Length: 371
Image (cartoon, rainbow, N blue to C red; front, side, top):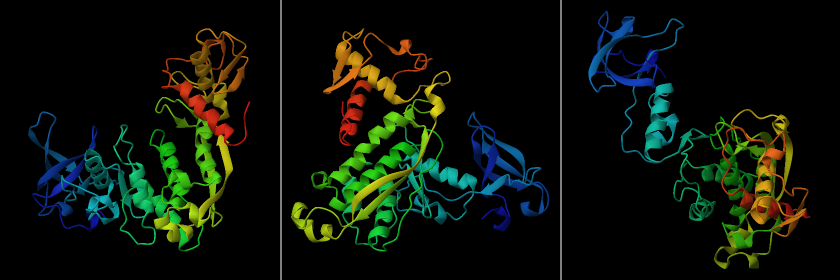
C-alpha cells in the first residue's frame, strides 16, 4: 500500500517525507513542482515545521536515485488512542508503510501502550520504566479466566500465551511462540511472562494449586539467567544464549478437590503443564574469558562474590562461608580484582546481587542440587 496506488498528491495532502534527524517528518503538500498533479511530476513542494517552530517549504523528489519512495501519505491517527482503535492492529491502518508504522507505535508509546498487533504478530516497545498493573496477577487471571470464549484480539503478551494455550486445549495442536528482537528489547522478560502464564493458566492463576512440575518450570528461570545472562553496553540483563524450550501439557494434574471449588469443573478439564525440556542451548562461552570495556561476564560469578562479602564483610573472614544454609568454599579474602576474567572495566554492579544469589541457590535446590 503506497503512493503508487493512491490518488495524486494534490495541494493540501498530508504526507511523510524523509528526515536525517527523525527518519520521517510530517508535512503538507504545497504544490507539485511541475504538471497538474504531483504524480505526473518528479517532485513536490512540501510545507514543514522546522526546529525553530517556523513554517518552511522544501522541494522533495518523489523517489531517491535508487528508486526508494521519499513521500508517503499520512494515516489519520488520533492523538487520543486506545486498544480499541485501528492503531492497536497495524494491519488495519489504511496505509501500511514505514512512516505509518513508526508513527502509530510512537503515538501508542506516548500513551503508555507498549504493545501493538500486526496481524498475528505482537510488537513490543521496551518502556524502560515500571508500568503499573501491566503484568499483575489480576491481569493474568483476567486473560486466563475466560478461555472457553473467543475474545477480541488484545495487544498483550498474555494474549499471545492465551492463544497458544487455546490451540493446545481446544484444537489439540502443538503451538510455537517465537520471541525475537534486538538487544535490550525485552526478550528475557517477555519469555518469563509467557512461561508464567502457561504455568498458571491451568489453575486459573492460583499459585497454591500449582503442581511440583509447574513450580520447577518457573524456578528454572533464575538458574538460566544466572548462568547465561550478563551485563552488556545496551542491557544489564542480556541473555547471552539462544534456547528452544519445549513445554508439555496433559491432564496429569491434582484432583478436582484441590482446585477452587467454584471453578472445579472447568479447571479439571484444562490441560496442565506436566513437563519441560530445553532442546537447544547455544551459550556465548567466549564471554567467560573475554569482555569488552563496559561489559561483564555471566551474573553467577558476581552474585556469588557479592553474597560472600555481604555475609562476612570485607575481606572474607573464613575459608567456608554459609549463604542461605549452603557452604561456599575457596573465596576467603578474595574480590573481583583477584580474578583475571572478572576485573570490571567501567561497569556498575547490578542491584542486590547477594539477594540474587540466594534466589539462584533456592532454584538449584528445587532441582535437588544442594551443597
